[in-house]
Length: 212
Image 1: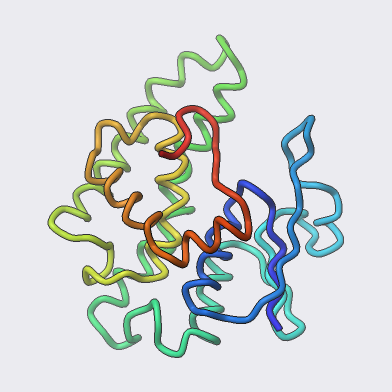
Image 2: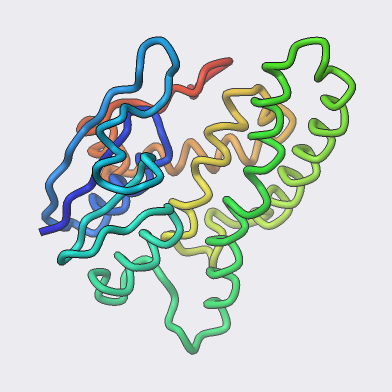
């Protein structure tokens, strides 16, 4: 039995959504955020040394990191779903988006959050951070030009992995300049499995403008 340790309003929403898309049986352990710090509770440290979510237990293994969890679940339990065949032309594109989401696209978003907490001391860095975020959103927007999804115009786990980037960008107001990215995120939200994940794990609300 799979067991997902899910921190509310976090990246682990992607894993919950993945499990729902694949129709897998799983146990869900939900953890609230600390009301003062907004951090994960210390109980998650007992599951994994980083004390963060998502964490997935699968057959005696404890997996952390969204991309690694998604890759493992799709390989072990997907039965060919949500990823292109390994020998296909689309597979390298799929791997690119799976790594790009956290390795590149989330970097300016996180920098914006942390530098924003510095107030006036961080103000000189904000134009550079905003410019880098627009650069990444423009890249994603171009990749979606004329298509509904990122890989072979077919919904895949890469879309699930990329979704949190756009959730965060929408919360900051950065998606307003990229209407096709807003439409793409709305398509993802409309999927029945996404709606089931929201019902089980709670909505994603990252502050600012939030999600529509």
